[in-house]
Length: 239
Length: 317
Image: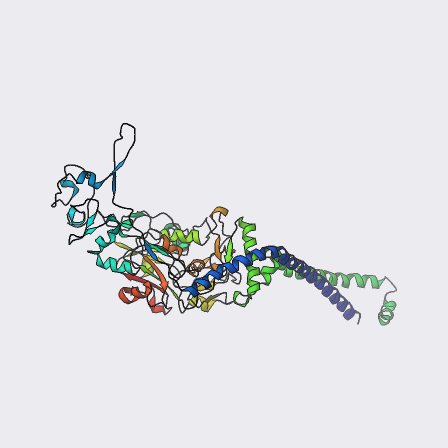
């Protein structure tokens, strides 16, 4: 009996000890949980507001169903030539194409910069075997012209490009060619798209080569020779 | 008690046996009792550690899908306060829910992608990835021409791109309609939402990494350490299921930037792409770009034979 009593007593002591521990740790938790909502309450107020405002305009614009436009960027105007020299007052300036070309006879046969004896000589041209005046307008050098001779402003350069590159133009119209920014959902905001010459140099339209900058350092990017797996496998082979 | 005394008194006459008996047994018992108590304390000590690492509110937080609106607001306020405390950045964490009538789909023009990696960088910045590891949800694979076998590609390429005998395959989460990662999650911390995006409740994830092993596209990432992001570089436009700064020891993944796309904006990787290879849209919209591509281009699905039914398409011009 005494042994059982002693065992019971030890058990009760252990139980009390255990309850004490659990109780203390629980009260610590509970104190924490009491403190957190109080401390957070003021933040919750402000958080709630932004929470609401984030979802409200979305609901409104859904109801309106008013579509924002898709904006295609345009060149600001005809190109201007920066003058190399300065005038006596030290000012530089730029001139329009027509400043020179109005008084010069256009050479309709010219196809590359190499055959020019004056001006535009360093220019690289790699755009099929078309002549300069296929696209530039001999009658008004501050504008372009289509294949049928119709005048096209520099701002409408995409009309010009599209007459040959209809496949790309079609893809562009469906968002499958060319970069864009803004919204996919036009009921919520506008979308901005690049035009042809934002990415392609009209005189050498092949997309330029680029240099890789950013690389994640994950296990797939570790060079094979220094990876842990490989070293492990090697040492296994040696053994 | 009386019986004990009567039993022990006769034998105890010569040499105080009660004291001897008591000291031996009691010493052993007390020893074991101490051992037991010690073991018990050791057993519950992780609770004290847990209390130190996570606040009680975080510990008691239920699954995201079971939270009421008020509870969500509390949780988000707590997370915003924690971000302020730990990272020194003022952020707004939204709770962006799927837009009714949308299913997001991505497409990449492999004829145009030149592997420059701008999308990888944009993802890194947009989603508040750890700055030290340059983590990102996107991996661009340099592939030999003539195969779509991912294993033949390499992600370690550098220098001038594109190389003549190579093409470039950006791989990120494909938001599968039959996601193997969701099937294997033992705690349902990851699931597929109505607009097709597979999300993770970072506060519910136990970090077992089953999903990482199950994903055939290597699209999931594990936070081996606490993400380090300088306060000035933290993207303050955050969402609970998306780019809020993840705790250590949880799995994360691409969410098609749902903190942007569910607000109508384009994903960050698309906006960063200088070649315009990326297309994003709502496949349920008959007039969307993505529908036109699926109907008019040669479209390819990565690892189609696995039956994962990705919401991610690759096409050629």
